[in-house]
Image (cartoon, rainbow, N blue to C red):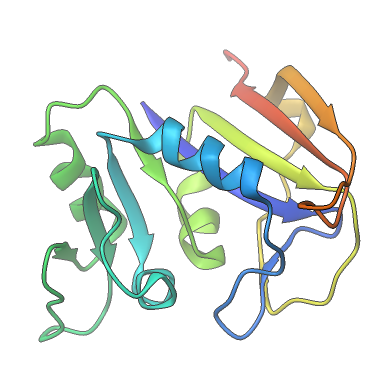
Length: 164
């Protein structure tokens, strides 16, 4: 199963200048717990923003650069190759973790989205694609208010693709 994990503002902004727009410790914990032991698929810029492979996960990076090879990660050149590499891990799930273009390309073949909806509108240069609500069902939502560690109200949402 292909799953997207993303934190996006109300206007779907997810990043600016190759950096996250906020620090939400609870979202970071959720992300780590959800993706631990699984293959994570990301674009090169997302990988570079992380600075190193994510521990405890098979890191699969999509890039058009033919000679680019970071240590501790698998490099592929398109979505199809990324999905094949994830399938070789025998994991039942693979997680798309960014950036905007990778989310856009994989949304049509994604079965579930773990969306941390950050309740603010913020300037960004990378965006999560608009989900057609006719294709998706909201399975659950947990709401949280801003506090000393979280600058914004946010909600953990789980979206499942509707059966056709």
